[in-house]
Length: 211
Image 1 (cartoon, rainbow, N blue to C red):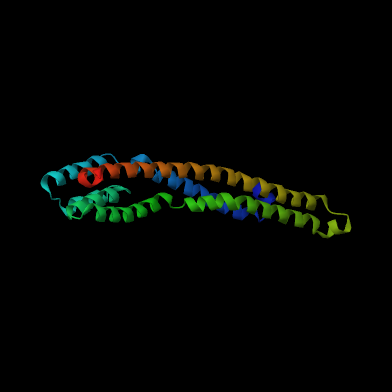
Image 2: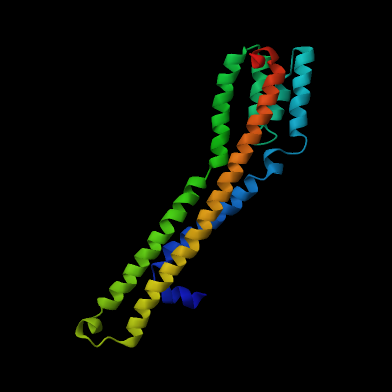
């Protein structure tokens, strides 16, 4: 592997760096977007139990809402609905506050996905840049100009050109596939959050939800 990197020349190092960054993003996002992480065991049950308590007793301790908000990345959404109802705010005010909290939550889901899409776009361009560098080494050598180029020098230029093209595509294709897969997972988690939040909101504001 090290000999391949040497044969590919210095243009391969930017590709190697972004490939490591892309792999780190894929691993981190795959771990973060797991359903068990977004909806830990018992978190939804806790939210709806607190909602039942709020409906029956008309009051809820702030400490309970704060503990709920810390259970998972999406718990602040559920806690927001409970907090608004506990404070006596009407449905429209609760919806406005919920939208603000939801935007912050969706940003957590989308974190680093833009960087991964950028890597998928930039990698082939960096590979093309390496190809150009290799061709410059071939045709810009003194031997090539005089018509008596060294075979070793020509072989090195061709290696730089081909290795960088191959590495650029080798990075771009998996990065693009990973971005699409993670984008789909993030959208799925968002739809699940919206559905659970809608059910909780409907439970706490039955009259307004029916209108």
